Length: 601
Image (cartoon, rainbow, N blue to C red; front, side, top):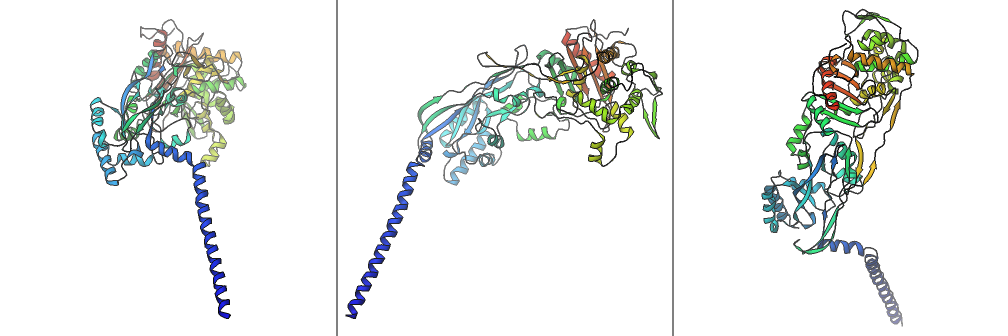
């Protein structure tokens, strides 16, 4: 009986174990079933897409970039057809040895650097089905050679796309900018772009890329397991980008660049009535077609190492002392705030002492007694030293900002700098030193710590021409669709309005006219036949070398249309070096062909 009880208990334990195992098996099968249901219902689309991508290739049809015209609808940037080689990473051989062999063959046929294909693939992680551009601008022989080797190169495609072409090569480079393939960083930050897209990298190409880029189309291609094309399943056509009409005048731009030549500096011409930039030349310059074709690494390295910085747009990125052109600001502020009146005179002996520190005038023998008008006409430094000491640094800074210094002008170009309007607080904060009277006298003539871009300096001439009104400079005139319909039109926008009385502006305008047209004026070499020019010379001290030369003008003096600024690095005197260049540019604008300097009256 004891034995029977023992057997019964063993049988019950066995039954419990069987039931436990059964429950465990059922739970396992249940989990598998739930996983299958999840994969089918919730992840089915993902796996279907992966499966389809192994069978279907989506090949982008790159949109043709919009065209860029000057104000007269003359083409400045267009497109030409180009052969490009791309590679779909997902179609590469799975075997590492076979893959390395394909890399080597691609590098040999395309004359690429060692490991260049692999490096590009590593930068393109997680986008296995999107074509990776390996090289563009192939000649027809190389393109045909690549097609011949296609069976040996799974995933390789030779595509015909449009390539940017700048009709006049380097003309307007710093305005137009250049294009290049979108970077991985920008691809992650910007919506509406795809790998391999060509985008603006500088200039209006960059600022207005959203207008120019268009929208890509797609070609749906069926392929077999080896990546060979079996047929075309569908097509979505691309949309061409919009066209830009700029404010530039191509002929005036060419005249400005020819006038500037190989000098380091900038020439800007602006319509004072609306802020339209008619010409913007910066030298040295560069041919943007090199970027469109794909600049080699060694050439890019040389370009970056170039000490003349040809990629820098000196008009908006060069920081210089405005020099004597800033005297317009100092005089306007002192007259308007009644620190002086027009008849107030100061004595100039050629040297001015502050304690034991001498501050000199450009005229070593001195100008004698100088009033407001004469101070501008002959550009007497010592007059402004004494006016500046009356205004003090705070007032000088206030008036500088009213004229737009210390702020970007808002021109539609990337990476514009704001310059520097110094104050006592700024000096104490940045240099741990107090502000001295000597700093004030240098500030009063646009020297010392004061730094500005040529575009900001040009604003001072625009304010003088317009009795205080400064329009936002702009390069875009209108945007047109590829069919010619106007999408957007730019309207003039007032950026600054410098408040001063009519008498103050009249004195400034008459004085600037005499700078060019009187015998004592420092800007005599900018005179024109039958057209009165108003202007101001500047010779800005440069602690790193020879002085900078500048000249700003507006014309006609009695009814201004344009303002011109010439700023030359390390060129010497503004009256001798910059004023003659301004005359040439203004002759081009007004259609004057004599090229002769007019005698003073």
